[in-house]
Each structure stands twice: as C-alpha cells, then as structure tokens.
Image (cartoon, rainbow, N blue to C red; front, side, top):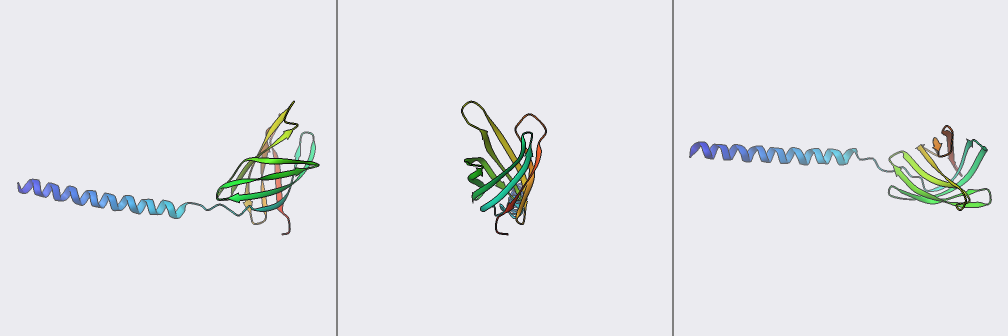
Length: 138
C-alpha cells in the first residue's frame, strides 16, 4: 500500500511539472510570435517585366495579417488579391490582362523595411523580376 501511495504521489508530481512546463513553453511561443509590419497607405511600385518597365501606385489597407487594396496601373484600377502580411514579409497578387481573353496572376513577395518594400515578382513565362515599392510621402 505504501509503494502504491508513493507511486501515485510521484505520478502527480510528474504531471504537475509537465503541465507547468507545457504552459511555460506555450508562453514562450506567444512571446516570439511576430506582429505584422504596418503596410497601410499609398506606395509607388516599379519593376521590369518581359514587356518593359512597369510602374503602379498601390493603395493598401491592412487588417491584422490581411492585406487588401488596389493598384492604379495606367488608366486601370486593379484589385489586390490574396494579400498577406506576416511579420516583415508581404505578399499579394495582381491580375494582369483583360480578365476575359487572357490574364496573368502576378505574385509579389517581398519584405518591408521602414518605408520600402522590395522583393520578387513572378507569374509570366520567364525569370522572376525584382520589384520595389516606396511609401508615398516619406
């Protein structure tokens, strides 16, 4: 009986210690979770595509990690799709083309640092291109 009581006491101590360690580990994970960088606002974006130099103005709205908005590309207003901000990493899709006979999903992936976002854009036949966006008014 005494052995059984000792085993139960040891098991209780192990479970208590394991629960405390699990809670401590959970708190550490939360402390390391990155907050999304502030991307709200207007940006001038440029890159070189296979068909030539491209310039756009972005109007971005961020809610937590979700990124929405549109790009002014010449006379066209094109919606930003699948936008995401995760820490300093930014990604979004802009659909090029007329949307009826042909279109290309251009995937922009980059990193924000202060008032500049830079990264790679892909989505057409050919190598990805470097792109840069600068916050307007900075």
